[in-house]
Figure 1 (cartoon, rainbow, N blue to C red):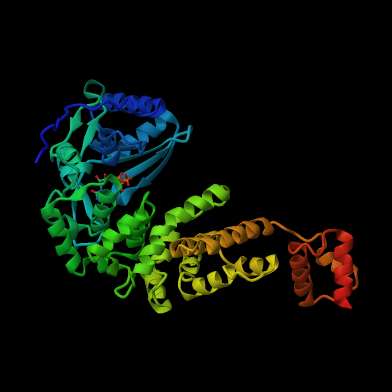
Figure 2: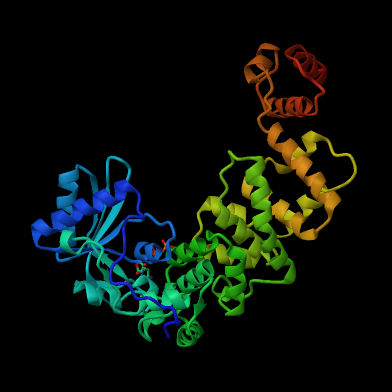
Length: 437
Ligand code: CTP
């Protein structure tokens, strides 16, 4: 139902878009006029224009041969063009860095649920009605005479105003089970609610084995997108509430401790980013580590395989469990720990792991341990740029036979530097000589 003050617009102003995008859209509209084609801005960007949220994705769709039209735009603007024949879509990259996706308006048929659909040309109205949710099934025409005309045949504006996520047809989640996770993502991002029938359909689809049929990369993509949202802790709690975490692994343990760690990640990230602004953190991976931090190594390994995570991501995620607790115990030990010992404790781990450790400590609510950890992580970050003056070549010049002891001596030397036991080149040489013997 449309709320009392619901206002249904027939046009939408594109003036909120940055000037460069706006100009480009006008030019594309005129080019479509020349070709006698209709062209639309479509999907999430239109939804966000209606919500007055920033989203400058240029997703366009044309009634007719989308790829031919994309080629024409690319020719006119001298832009780069990548064509995806299988999906009848193209991506243009303009010289000023702007990107634009152009598709043809299509209907989709799913030979089998959960697999990618085949597409056939169709009208814009049909194109909108094959989409995931009413709020995303909206388009704005770009042809000059109709510039700004809003197409909303499924009540998208009504649902935006009622703050509701609603599927367009009963088979939506079955056709494309990624929409189960998309529904949660939009619900949590906008603070909306799943409409009743939609919630029932979601639960129905989730109770079948359709999600299991999704390929690893598609599931990974959805999960990481969800974990990349502003506040993934809420989305994770919602997944748990709807019993959807089992699609990561049926024995994933979402205990109160995990919940506290997941909730603490945002604080931990905020501290980390303010303290070390140059370190680029893979935030979704930190959340995945926190989420799986109380699960057994076997469960985590299976989850990693299911999501087809990269080797690098897998290495990080598999650290989350007992190992993290052991490292943390040493790091928050109130006794004296040398800086070099902290350095050696942490050097093999990525910054994502450091953020996880910090989150675990935040969740423990022990002030002393936390300030100790802050000091030690800060010292570690400083120490990791510390270098010895002497190199292997110098050791050779000092008469050391090539062999594994090079690594040992240079390691000891670095420890001594970090601890401030040697501070000059001369002291380094003296240290090596003494060590040799
Ligand atoms: N879409 C769909 N079903 C999907 C994925 C996408 O119907 N499984 C449609 C929706 O209309 C969506 C549009 O394709 O708006 C673009 O997809 P995407 O870029 O993934 O979604 P956005 O809505 O733009 O999401 P975001 O704001 O997160 O970028």
